[in-house]
Length: 254
Ligand code: ADP
Ligand code: MG
Image 1 (cartoon, rainbow, N blue to C red):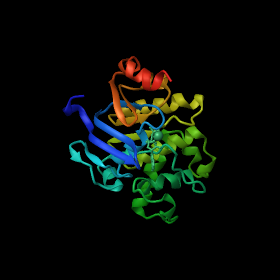
Image 2: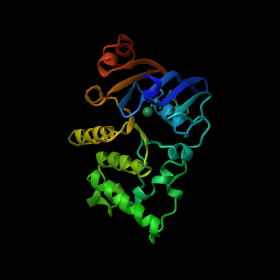
Image 3: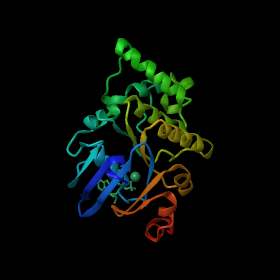
Image 4: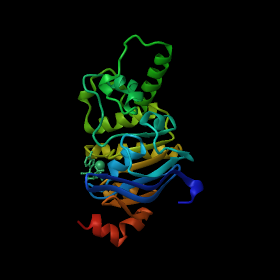
């Protein structure tokens, strides 16, 4: 990926837990306005890499930048404010709160603080009402508007993933890092979630998503990066990466 087409650039990022190296990436360039899949076996370091890049986990070494802005050392909320927003492998839906209330918790979701500590005020002021209108428009887009006043606990796996994407969009991101957005989504809704990701890409958003299902990766992504034992072992078009003996060895052949 040429530098001028790179939205997110990761260089020399390392992180170990105890004696175990979780991430040891030489360089990854995430192309702007494309759908990039991050694949690799369980424990490859995909989530830890997301945590580091978005300020939820410290790195032992390395630098990373988004649209030319260095991110290394910045806190989660500051990274989100620059337009790089993420979702989590384990969805951070607050049960006992309505779907709309979950949308309004958008900012705390990126702050690294517990969602449950974020205060909720039923008497919205003007700015908050505008935010609620934006939230409702996003819920419409993701076919969740009819659920707006219902407890988020009642959502299906797929609806939870969509709510997380919708909530991430509340922050007006330029790039989204999605950790397993298709996990726990039933087959009927998988295609819908995928269509949403494609349309976000078509609107110019940069997306990096973790996914295990190679059929989804092959049909969805413009670019694929494969991690294994923390290292980038392959990168290219979906066909190139799927056919790379190193990837077959470390991941697909297993
Ligand atoms: P992936 O998302 O690719 O499945 P992870 O990033 O979750 O991989 O994990 C990479 C490695 O780092 C694994 O060996 C995992 O056990 C380890 N790891 C991740 N987070 C922690 C942590 N907080 N403490 C100790 N080990 C961790
Ligand atoms: Mg993971």
